[in-house]
Length: 225
Ligand SMILES: Nc1ncnc2c1ncn2[C@@H]1O[C@H](COP(=O)(O)OP(=O)(O)OP(=O)(O)O)[C@@H](O)[C@H]1O
Ligand SMILES: [Mg+2]
Image (cartoon, rainbow, N blue to C red; front, side, top):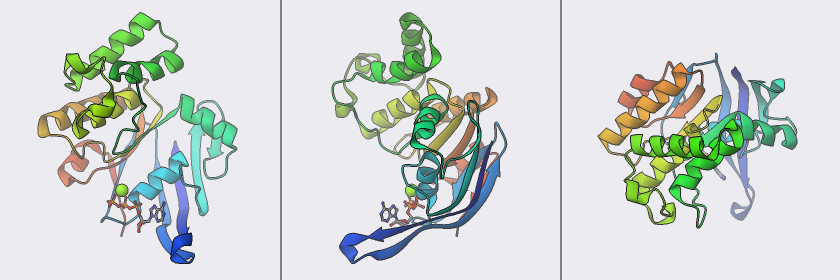
């Protein structure tokens, strides 16, 4: 489903006089459909950089990211056209960053409903029910459903973020420390959701600081130096 081959990314930082900062170096790993690879390694090793290269928030410097797309067959996410990349993001691939990119004046419920409505082609009523169910499972208090997440706590924002990414059952899910600001009970709820999603066929690449969580969720671990 996904094969990362000799991926490398360096940053040239202009304000440091074009200083050359290594992001990630010679990264190779692969996943079959339904597998869950967790990237592990010390802070600064390049874990987030790898995820951002797969989602192409960062343009890879060299190497390949072969992805077997449902709609386009095998494509190299490192070089595929913007048009195809955006379509793959829309229909197949979701990315959970550590913090919610808060969209002003959109309620938590609407944030979670929106991808279900646009991607799964279900009725408004069904999308609403699915979104409510997810938010309940992630223990977002019901009085917050219609509120704007800009004012939510870090942990609440993170759970809305996860709900939005998993609500439409993407084919490939990228998770950058999705449980970093959560308490033990919320973490368990998130892990349950991720396990269910995997059983339904979603392939995942994730980063978890806590080795216990990593062992519980991942089918494979890719260590970085
Ligand atoms: N946009 C950027 N511009 C310049 N340097 C960057 C940029 N993004 C990442 N880096 C550098 O790349 C290296 C890897 O960063 P990255 O965020 O991938 O690490 P990480 O393994 O995710 O660390 P952490 O566990 O702390 O999140 C770091 O030295 C970082 O400073
Ligand atoms: Mg990181």
